Amino acid sequence: MKLCRFNEGRLGLVEGRGVRDISAALDCLPAYRYPLPPYDVLIANLDRVKAAIPSSPEIPLTAVKLLSPVANPGKIIAAPVNYQKHIDEVKTDVQLHQNNPAHTITIQKAGLFLKATSSLAGPGEGIALRHLDRRNDHEVELALVIGKTANNVKARDALQYVAGYAIGLDITIRGTEDRSFRKSPDSYTILGPWLVTVDEIPDPGNLNLRISVNGEERQNSSTRYMILSVPELIELASSFYTLYPGDIISTGTPEGVSPIVPGDTIVASVEKIGTMEVKVRAQAGIR
Ligand code: MN
Image 1: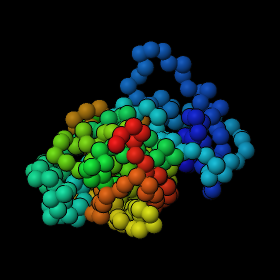
Image 2: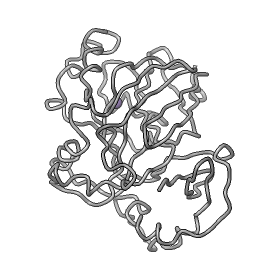
Image 3: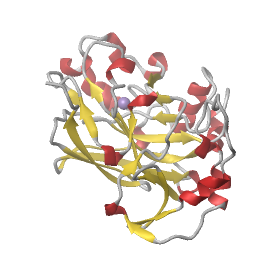
Image 4: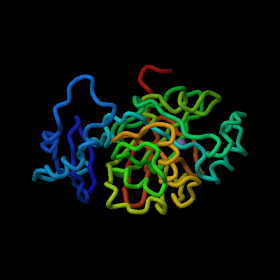
């Protein structure tokens, strides 16, 4: 099942080149009162929502604005240096490593990092670049969405805690600052084009992922080259903090990162998920 959010927060079921508005299924969500829980209430109640899907007419996907399929993640977790060839390209390019030793150590030593939840946007919202005097790069990644509360989970059990997968773009300002700072401007985390439920992707460890900019291919690899696999990333993350429904883990990028500038059009694909187009612009009000 492919679930999207579109336009002004409608919930959609994607079928082929169309989407059906199934927002009425959201009526089954419990009535929450302040303070809200620290997780995404749609993902936490996904089974209920799936059981309440109404019939509705199909709209062409090209006619809707796609938002992030997760609206309110408690955390956006990301893996640095999780593909060896990306580590190699960083090591040999000062523009990438900026003489920061944190960029060239292994993921086992580097651990994971967090991105601001306010950085999250959908493909239809585009990327608004800041600090145009510095290099802004694309990173295409497989992203997973946690479905059930997970704490100290072992890798062998980890896939039971996944709700589904989406394409993640981890947009990055190159520089010396901490990753969480450089990768957290508004719209620097794109999640889309929809959430593919876990039953459609039993093995996340063998998926082609690629990205082009203005029609020119920049990254093309496979999740089989990840240093820490999806289950191992969940084990590592949940050994440090509790994972909640809707938490996103972006699993790292392969080689081929390169600059993007306002006016660019990005097309990103992950096998078994789909393809999304994302426009790049300058953040309003900056020089
Ligand atoms: Mn990344």
